[in-house]
Image (cartoon, rainbow, N blue to C red; front, side, top):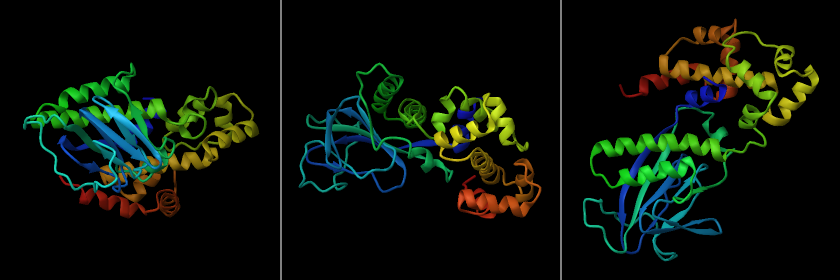
Length: 294
């Protein structure tokens, strides 16, 4: 498993399709406000989307994604007088209306405090066109086909297809000039990132990471900070707290065991580092396990 795959698996991002139907007549939709990355896929007709001062048209098979949950307005016809989220949609089991716009709407949920930091490396919105030859366009086409089914298995498959689409969008659209994703693709820094992600609770030094990258200590530290916007030691702490969060939430391990797994000899020093990175204490994270439906 590569370091990038490890990171994405740890965040546990999951899609949730909450609407699949047709809007008719005068209508307008804004799905922002949840704090999640939302999306619309046009499955029939046309849709006009307004984001800030920009307006663009989506046709059947096109999709738009809002990584930062931007306020927007999706409508059949650009009409400022139509209030948002007041119109009822019809299922595709009803006859398709001539003026209808079919929409699949959903969002990407997560269970990790660092997910928003990752999304900040994406643009305000991403448009995927059906006629493109990209993997994301091909997946959107599969979602278009499945949207016209009416059974529960289709809804489940739409969620899983949207999961795949998220990772492809991340790969294709994330800023690779700076930040964590830039480090994963850098010819030298990527080697140290792999070393960090494979280290478990092993004690790492700046010298050992610089050696892996084939650089001097000072040159490595400077380059890493320029790209990742964190020092190597800060990133090591962030990654290990990211892992610890998963163990606490998913497995309910003790704070002491989490400290040992991440290389801390003191439970107190681990707890302090965990709260600094995650903004919550280990005990608060562990409570999430009890709140998760069985």
